[in-house]
Image (cartoon, rainbow, N blue to C red):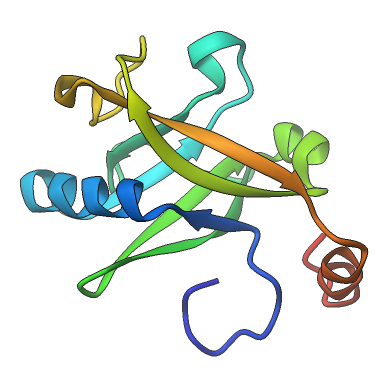
Length: 134
């Protein structure tokens, strides 16, 4: 996580290209948030919204906050049901050319966000599990 005080392994990260786009989108739209849905096709893409536009609740899991530089932090959420399938993974938000089919803020820019994932290492998983995060 990006609060600078946690020593736990991160569950989410952002590539430099995606962070640059997020800074641009934040300048245009204000504070931002991501919600990773569990649908198929573009329904499983990370969706970027103005903060608070997508309402989260008891069915959502806060995965962490992305440090996008310039003091910007973007929280990342996922439905708890989908999290049960993905809790063993580290997720990195990246950006690639092309348009997604959703309402994510990057669509007019001719690019789309996507998730790159890897399994947590045994040590990362053990630390997160011991801390009660998983």
